[in-house]
Length: 128
Image 1 (cartoon, rainbow, N blue to C red):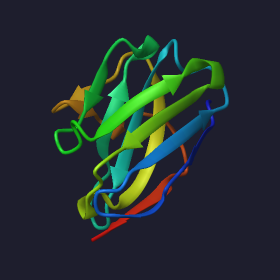
Image 2: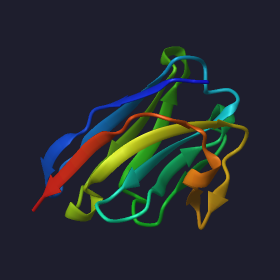
Image 3: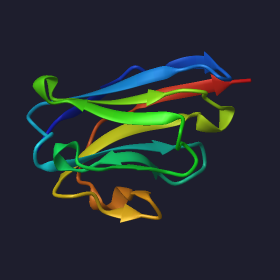
């Protein structure tokens, strides 16, 4: 079972940027779908971005398209989520996850129900 650790969260103002990192205990690039998810207060966990094995395809929720970018560094066993033009509605706990195979996508973004390996999360707070 792969171990995932997120970092990079923090507090920023409206329009600011953050880059989240997810360090994996093993190689996840070549054979896993990797995803970023968030859980806003009082809401269910939702998919934000995902990447198929080998980086062949990426997926984004409509709410973050054009603002967020998912990437990987296979040499570091790390996944990143670059977040730009942040909005107060982006305030949430952000999680990375990995699951063997291609991403299972619902309405354009990976669905959390299909992932079994999760990190502990990192908090992002955007103030206006």
